[in-house]
Length: 92
Image (spheres, one colour):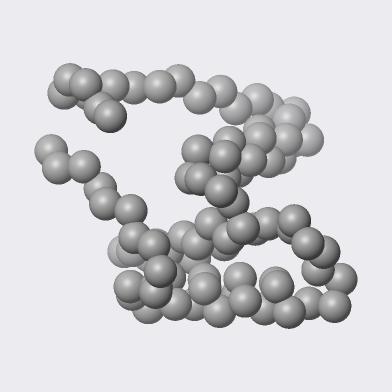
């Protein structure tokens, strides 16, 4: 299994272009403050797009997304746990 690649810079498909436009709107909002960050996800059925905007690294952004998802589950009387799964040897 090949490792997914990380794309930086220009959006590379329709959904990431939409997410990028939404992130730019976030920055332009009059209530935006320096240091505000966002994760924008779009689901097109067979594909999805994701823009992590304002984060220094992906791990920090995904930790914030997981924390928010868990809070949503808990607000609905459930819990959400994440377990790392390592398939096929070492991943770096």
